[in-house]
Image (cartoon, rainbow, N blue to C red; front, side, top):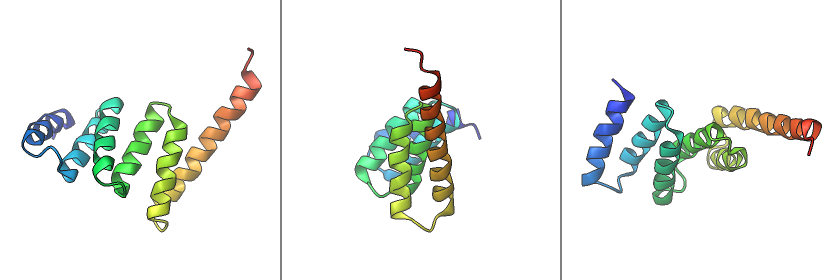
Length: 115
């Protein structure tokens, strides 16, 4: 199935049930799959507004933030995921990788900033 088609179908369904967390979750993930990160982020935010402990959406919002180069916000999301589900190894691995990425960017800024 095409993720673009899925977004279209989910969006139509949203007209009938605008506050359904599973539907909002699926839309946010489908937008991420087609690389529409700003839209994915918007639907993640809508979902989290309704369910602040939804680790699946927090994790996908983290990925959207990374894709939009909003690393500090991504780190907040992945930390929240670890806080909510500390036994989930994917969250721990992702947090480690993100911390390394942030540190690398910070070092590059220090080393190569010519302003």
